[in-house]
Length: 346
Image (cartoon, rainbow, N blue to C red; front, side):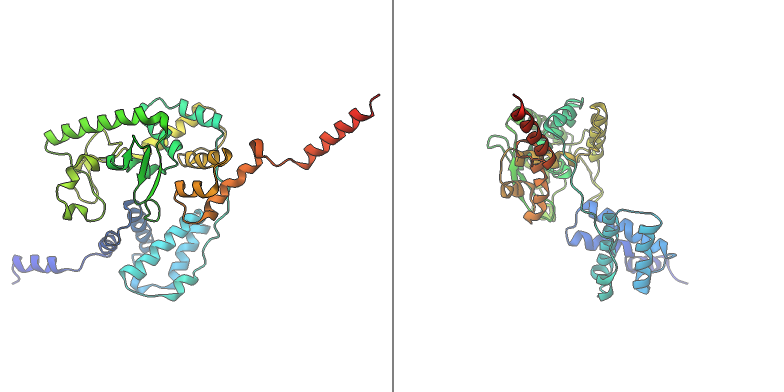
């Protein structure tokens, strides 16, 4: 007869489940929480699509069948299919330790080349003017005034915001890169008030025995008191405590991204904007308006954090608007005909 102690020992010695291995590998390589959630979701769908078969026993036909189903039956965007393929590449190469050259040969959906939606200055003012929530409005004005991405702004720490020098250090942006951008002068007072609010909230949390936040990578292990430091607090903290999905601790996280996205959707509707507007539209408008104002493309590239200037060049479509607009041949023809008519008059 097997004792209970031996059965417990056998259970503890059992190898981790596949998805737990994937999660551990993603965290070891410091992938973002959003990427972790996305990759786990795609790997789970891949396994369920093939009747819960283990990925180690599948190959090129199964991967192609899954990706084809996404494109043909679900009609997902090319970027969505590319993300699913990236998740499967990570699974086979990083977790299962299998080098499969055929994965590089899997047909990828062609990414369409599209121009970004850009608001005029008047449309931007109308959009921001329709946001009633003061905190949401401050966040959106900062996004437009600095060119940050939404999560870069929401994950901004107090230590990386220097209102006096009007500088923001964006840590671990897209591609894991740091960069610097500006603080709009007209937001200086509002941001100082926001920092004072964060300090008061943090002090109240410390009195209640809380006040720690999640730190990047493994800093919390090296500096156990750092999560309680004021400098590491979020500039835009959530109103209530919630469970940190990575540590399982009850902490104060940052403002929810969906709250800002909903605010933009409502503001665009209330402002009567016909263009499809998202939070990211403010970043596109930031870059376009800088180029319209005469700033060089390299400066805009650095502020946006693009590694390749060709990515920034897409904003040069502003050459067809404003004072730098290219004159249509038709406009020139009409002008010349009007001039010729005037010249023939007695």
